Amino acid sequence: MHKIITGFAAIASLTIAAPATADPITLGNGDIGDSFTVDYDGFTGSASNTIDDLTASITFTLDSIMGDAYSFSYLVANTTGNGVESRISSFSFNADPDITDATSTGVYDIAFVADGRGNDPRNPNQIGAVDVCFKAAKSGSCSNSGGVTAGNTGGGTLDLIFSALPTQLTLSDFFVRYQSISGAGNVSSASGQSISSTGGTTSGTQVPAPGMLGLLALALVSLGLMRRRRRVDPSQPAIA
Image (cartoon, rainbow, N blue to C red; front, side, top):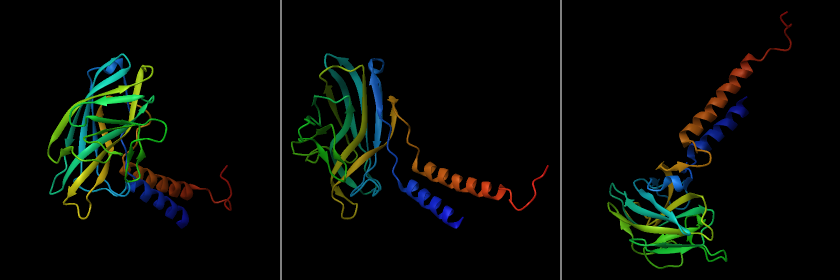
């Protein structure tokens, strides 16, 4: 039994440590005019190595669906604080179905789209390739200069363009890039992943909060103990 408890405890510790990410957002004609907000953490090295007080949010509004494009307004808020400074140089996400092109205006007026030939926008910190990245300056990746500094907001518009306009669009894997960081030890740049989203229509299976996963594992341990205690001793005669 000690080995079983140890195994469940290990699972519980892993689930408690694992970061939860926001659900994908599915949009269609019925969502024109609606907004959804994505909240981001900050991490360096890997997604489990989070940095306190390095945070952001982006509000997307679906303005129109026409021709070959889904058109949005966006507002980036750099909510970094408590002595930590940063600027958000880009934001990115994946789209299903695949987009063929993208355009943008405002603070992040450079759209970098995957071309299917290896020339893909990439994020550091073990994120890798994404479908599209919106940047404040030209560069070969999603890291660059410019952007929204701590305590400020910046907005604009963006168009996601398709070879054939889909009836539904799903956006997922939302990321931001932080640079010029100070007040966080020796960390000067980092990434952020979506940790929650509000508004819009979610798709797929909701990801439980890390603490809930840990409680679930502990509940399984308790259930196993109860079942073992209730097991009938085979050496005792059965009751008629």
